[in-house]
Amino acid sequence: MKYKIPTFSDEQKTLIHYLAAGYVVEVCTEVCPDLGSVAELNNYPGHFNQRSLFRLKREGLLKEKHHYHSGLRWTRLALNEKGLTVANAVAQPGENRYA
Image 1 (tube, rainbow, N blue to C red):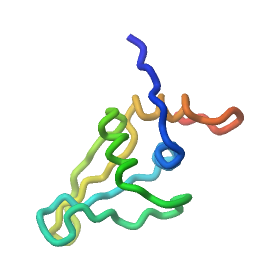
Image 2 (spheres, rainbow, N blue to C red):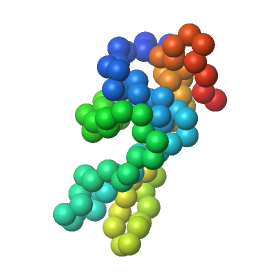
Image 3 (spheres, rainbow, N blue to C red):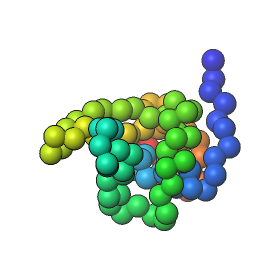
Image 4 (cartoon, rainbow, N blue to C red):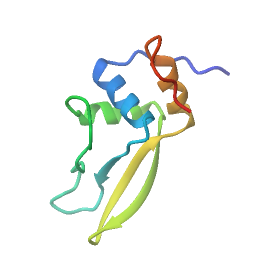
């Protein structure tokens, strides 16, 4: 069954392309005052919006890996295979395709 590519906002497409370029988003998932905090996004082109991250998660485009930093649990989010397929589908003509 072929996956129908949904319509994404410009902010969501920016996040998809950022993740497809090999970057990750790290979110604090420890119950503490930092819960939900997003680690600094190096070279992020534009304004990061957590709702965009929620949408990618809801669409099943992300893989998660938990790790600990200074005793706090963080979740590292990156595109999965389906996410890379979507990144290629929403790329503008002439843009780099993602492996």
